[in-house]
View 1 (tube, rainbow, N blue to C red):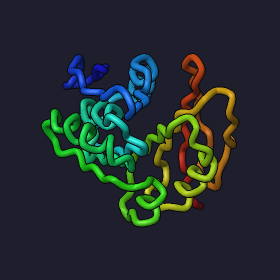
View 2: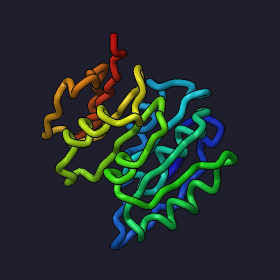
View 3: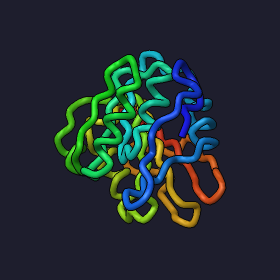
View 4: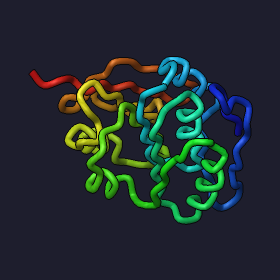
Length: 181
């Protein structure tokens, strides 16, 4: 897989094949989403369900710092660490379930990208956890990638649908957290 933009554009990362089945996000989807997000200088980025780390690398390539990646699969984690090592800036990686990270996390991120495996059944609950968590500040963005046949709410607490894009058989939704008051 290749990084689609920014200072690391064109660099390839390792994706292990076989039993690990890292489900890489499509190049076209990544390129489009990051074009919408634009320059990420000054933004912080959280990549939930990181897999290969390609989304965190795309964010770092476009100036996001800090970048944090979460991946619970202990077999995928060494590959994630190898891939993020190509970045000049440190990309922090944690091997734990996303749900545990959200319970423990106290840091706020400008952008949270959720790319769970398509069979993951708790996408709506994940949005509720993010809404209730300090992980997403006022005006923060939550992006979630999911199969087109599934439905997610237009609003979850203070997370409100701001945009939606279709990419083949999948959708990326952009939620913005409303400011209180």
